[in-house]
Amino acid sequence: MPGSNPRFVAKARGLAVDEVLLDLEDAVAAAEKERSRGLIAAALRDGDWGTTIRAVRVNDVRTGWAYRDVIDVVEQAGRWLDSIVLPKVTGPLDVSWLDLLLGQLEQATGLPPGGIAIEAQIEDAAGLASVAAIAAASPRLAALIFGPADFMASLGMRSLTVGMPPPAYAGDAFHYAHLRILTAARANGLQAIDGPFAAIADLDGLAASAASAAALGFDGKWVLHPDQIETVSAAFSPTQDEYDRAELIIEAYDYYTTVQRRGAAVLDGEMIDEASRKLALVTAAKGRAAGLGRTRRFEPPG
Ligand code: GLV
Ligand code: MG
Image 1 (cartoon, helix red, strand yellow):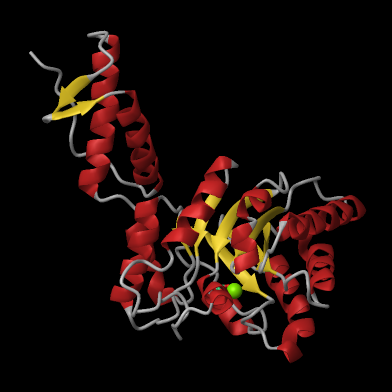
Image 2: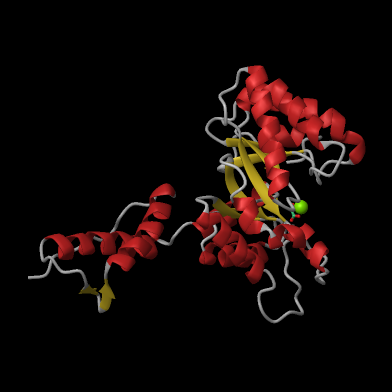
């Protein structure tokens, strides 16, 4: 949500999302940046955000706005803030700068040390080239976020729609970036989040974009408009069949390894072993988080 528009920010309360991002960066005009800091701080302080994670995106470290964005928002509303999204991260020093500044602000304002998380946007060639070092740059890091618009511009990709890979390319133009970000995130215990898809009316395109990131293992995706929430949530939740199968594998594996003391067994014509259990745990956790319930139970043989 652009932090310059209090009406939009107010609308963001109560949406069925895990996190709300109040923006000071590319969705806010240069002339509105300074005023928006106070608007965002007031919105964080005064509104009821329930359990939604509250994040503010500051301007990037090479602008003259970044330091004051962080200082004003944290001094005025630090206790109502969960995370800072740092855009256009090009190397680990960008993250270290924010980590140190947040540490100073936490000390000065009596906030718990390390309480404010950092989410790093990887959205240009330099950032992707350094993604492994960026992912290890601070214990505050919670997530790496792919920024497709800036990334396409940085590489020179031929698309004019944010989040839409260039249509003339036969493969998935984002695959390399997605996998590198995901691998760096997982190697450091971070979430990997896919960026926005700007064609708000194109829900099929959004569904395809979200399905591709979800299939790789991404944890979520930004939405730009309330109409995108349902499509993206559905893409990141397992289907009922997938969820049932995951829970069944976990239950069956437990039976075979403990009752029958076998490390590998056959379930519905498919071999399952310890690696199958690990795979099943991923899908089961996502299904439980999405509130799914089981409709199938394991029947021990015999
Ligand atoms: C988001 O910030 C993007 O550049 O896609
Ligand atoms: Mg961007």
